[in-house]
Image 1: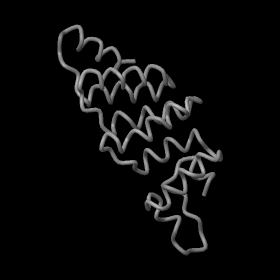
Image 2 (image 1 turned 30 degrees about the horizontal axis):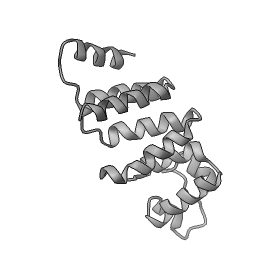
Image 3 (image 1 turned 120 degrees about the vertical axis):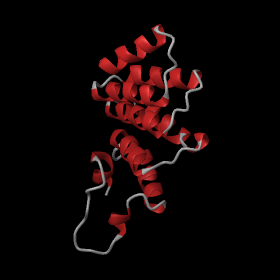
Image 4 (image 1 turned 180 degrees about the vertical axis):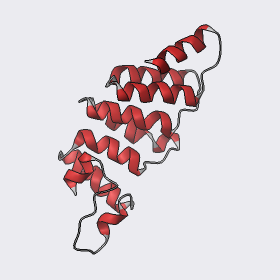
Length: 141
């Protein structure tokens, strides 16, 4: 909540918010399970020409994914390359937490494997190493 108040105060004081301030506010929405607010903040950053990078998109994907807003999480995830942002292990983990064992989740998990996102899963050991995975991809592994 403090991050949201700070963002509001910046606007009131006519101080231009930055990617860092938007990121903090969106991350606070993720911690408070407020997907709609996080989407609104991300949209505000984009409308105000703030260079919203991974630090803004990934927490928005995560909060949407974890709160049954998986269609929005998937749209944000698929939008990353269009914005020249990488689909990293963090973004794959975030979107797969919401998609889980669905057909779409399986397709995205396979894409992650092909891209080398989870390299420890492709090693030939007798142990399955799930340390770099969140719940969604761990279930799919």
